[in-house]
Amino acid sequence: MEPRNFDGDADRPRPAGAKQTGRVLVIGPYLRARAGSADAQSESHALPNHAQRDAEARLDEAAGLARAIDLVIADAIIAPISQIRPATYIGKGKVEEIAALAKSLDVELVVMDCALAPIQQRNLEKELHAKVLDRTGLILEIFGRRAKTREGSLQVELAHLNYQRSRLVRSWTHLERQRGGFGFMGGPGETQIEADRRLIQERISKLESELKKVQATRRLHRAGRQRVPYRVVALVGYTNAGKSTLFNRLTRADVQAADMLFATLDPTLRALNLPHGGKAMLSDTVGFISNLPTQLVAAFRATLEEVLEADVILHVRDISHEDAEAQQSDVDAVLRQLGINPDDSGRIIEVWNKIDRYDAEQREELLNIAARRPEDHPAMLVSAVSGEGVDALLAAIEERLAAKRTTLDLSIDAADGAGISWLHRNSEVLAKELHDGRFDMTVRVDETKRDIVVNRFDAVPRLSA
Image (cartoon, rainbow, N blue to C red; front, top):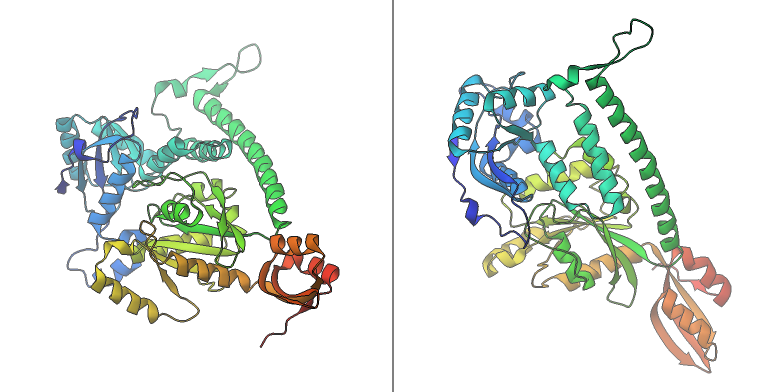
């Protein structure tokens, strides 16, 4: 195993009043291709995308997840494995090494950067004499801390209960106790584990019912927004790619933006002013991550409906990150789970963020790479911190939205102040000239307002060139 020493005092500064959860040992049990094997290269390609990442980068990400809930990292080590053991995930020798290290560091928690089966988690806790948390459990803990709205709390609790339900193994003797049966002699009754499972299932059913009400409310709000000419632009991307910073830059909002994983959990909507006077709604969503637990994707589907309904999706990438390509693949995989085609060039704009981290020569190289991309798959280079490239991004957003709008020519009496005012509020006025007491206007309207403008102002659609 390769040790990675972390100075707990040098971790990300905690906000005032934040509580330290405890000392933790982070383990990276990453699969490796068998050395000397003729199929070593093919095995590497057969690994899932998150398994092909650089082990150091994966361990850093796991440590970042732990720091996100104020855990103090005593140490972080890579434990390469050749195969997954059914009982403990890692081999017996490594279990003994980790147990000795955990004892010497006096840690309260061991984080395994992998998905553990319930039996594996229980066996590791027995051998290590410490609480064990896998990647899924750790992400759930983070989401539990971040959820602020009622909807977010419901979704986190639902995902947590689904995760817990599979982990009701007989780790404690009280789970084997029985409750009374029927009849004079009594029966085998209901064991505590069965009672716990029943209570969890009842709570899950209640949460699912409440979330359906939330979804219905969201549909009403969305229907209300669709009655005005505002279209939705959604931000998606890997966690910590700079979505919230870009959101603040585009909308002049003050949404929390921090250098931490999953800084944003609950969705936020703000008005987005476009270059030629038009407006859209910009939605900031939860960040994605490699090996995102399936139950989280399912639980947060209600929140991610803003992405599903968005007219334009901005895929924000931290182009300075060493694993930028792998992160892109992870985001694409989650989008596919949501039923969105990541190759839909008419809907998705790729945003290469954090170019301020490059010098002039490196930026020129990035620009050349972006210029060689197909015209229908452009990449917008921006810095959410400095604002560089933001104007070009706004123009690209406006162009995509305009493709879904109709250009109309009309003539309106100059005395019709109410009608002219309505057009300015509900359409994008492209041209306006006064001739003989009438305004000849060219406007661009959303499809939801097209018929209103045509019928009220006798507008004529402009033929495409």
